[in-house]
Each structure stands twice: as structure tokens, then as C-alpha cells.
Length: 311
Image (cartoon, rainbow, N blue to C red; front, side, top):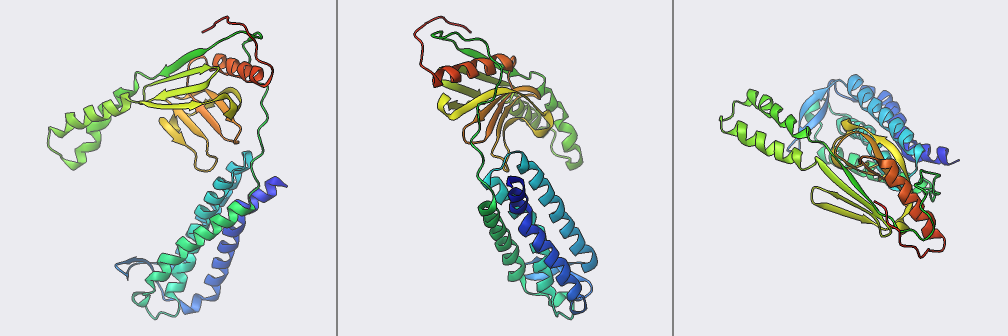
């Protein structure tokens, strides 16, 4: 049932809008100029396209976006993500509809001066689709603590873990900076200045530190510090993240997941009670996940009184 609601939330209204736009295009074919205006500047049309080409392209984009949004959110439904996906998917279809309305009954594309329609309808339609998508989408389920790794923390024993990850080769990518400037023919002094600036920016995301203890998880990256107490965390495990989705702090707008990355590969995954996940690239992530799971299990039971220490 949840899968059906997610599919309806992310793709229902965009699909209806796409079908309606396609049908109206066929119905209005004789009432549209050839070509139609598809771009406006300062309120006047200044760009054209064939309606038979423009409309199918826009509807295809809507179809691709609604399928992608539905597939992503079926893994873990998030209302904000469903609304965001529905609004983004609806936008191309509503834009095509607005363009058709602006050109309707115009003898020539230059007479399609209903600029306000093209401006307001796509934005308003996307907002309405997003709000309806968020209302239809189910609430994300309260996550259950997974049976993740363990380090065998004994009752009463105190422990903490600290570690991190680095990517010392990343600043070398700055050497490619001059290649991006050749076509612009800038002053020679700009080459070393920009190369150094890029190298410094890349160096800022080469080191990440994490601490796991009884007070929760602390993440430090680029002078940024995030503290997550144990009562916000449902469990921990090891997962993989991709280098190609970017480094630094990355946020998935559909699911609300956050990643702190200095490289690709194995990462510590924190499953929050809110239904979202946090990914952190660290060396030996299984140790961090195991200790965190043990601390969470002990936090739910009666606390011990021991004082042995680990690192």
C-alpha cells in the first residue's frame, strides 16, 4: 500500500498533467501558430520551436523525472522528498501547457504575448503538485535498530572511538585548473592564483574526523562540527558511498540523507530515528558502528558502573 501511495504522490499529478497537456496539444493543433513561441524576454517572445517537437520533449522529461523520483523514494518514503519530486516532475509538463496557452489563437508566434501565463502557471502548477504529493505520501516508518556490527562492549565498560579519513591526493586536481582557462585567454598571473585557490579549496575537504562515545557522535569537516546524541540514533552499520557524487557535505533533497565525504568507498552509516541516514567516510567504519550499536543497546538497558576504557 505504501508503494502505491509513494507512486501516486511522486508521479500521480505529474502524469495527469502530462496526459492532459498531450491531449490539449492534439485538440488545439489547428489553433496554434507554426512555429510556436517558446521563449520570452522582457515580456516579448524571442524564441521559437515546432510544437510537435517541443511538447513531446517536455513530456518525456516529466516521465523520466517522475519515474526516477518514485524509484528513489520507494526505498524510504519522506514527505518532503515526495513533494519535491512531484513538483520537479510536474514543472516541464506545466511549462509546456503554459506555452500552448500563451500561443493559443495567435496568428503568428510574435503575437504570443501572454508572458504572465508562461511565468505564473509553471511555478504555480509545480507548487500545487508538490503540496499534493507531500499530502498523499505516507509518513516514513520509525526505523528499528538494525542488527549491525558489535565490538562486544561489556556491561559497565566505558569506551570511545576516534578516527577519520583523508585524501591527500585530492589537491593535485588543482593542476588541471590552467586547462579550463586556456580558451578565455586570461592574464598569466591568473593561472597560478586560481590554481592555488582551487588547491586550498580542495585541501579543505581532504580530512575528516569522527568521535563515537557515550555522548553520541561528533563529526568534524572543514571547520564544521556536528554533534548527534545517542537518543537521535537508531543504529549504525557500514555502507559504501560513491566518489562521483561529490565530496564535502552532500545532502540528498529527496530523502534528506546527509553525507560527509573526503573519498569514496566504505563509510559509517548512522540510521537516525527520524528515518534519515548520515554517511561518514572513515577508516575502519565497522569498529565505529560496532561500538555505537553497543552503546545504543546499553543506553536502552540499565547503565553499568564499570570504567574500563578502549580507543
